[in-house]
Image (cartoon, rainbow, N blue to C red):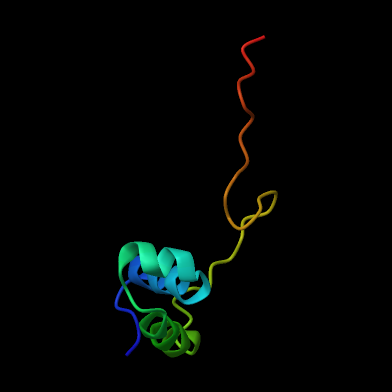
Length: 66
């Protein structure tokens, strides 16, 4: 059963790849793996990164207080 939203797809991918997170949220890792495998063919998790960014997220500078 594929995910119905990108948010659910990211959540299930996190569960599939991180046993600690799966245990913390109370969802079996096998469920996350099943969803993640079903989502592989749909392209719901594919996101094109913008130029000059990493993973589509722009880096910001930290304020050092100086």
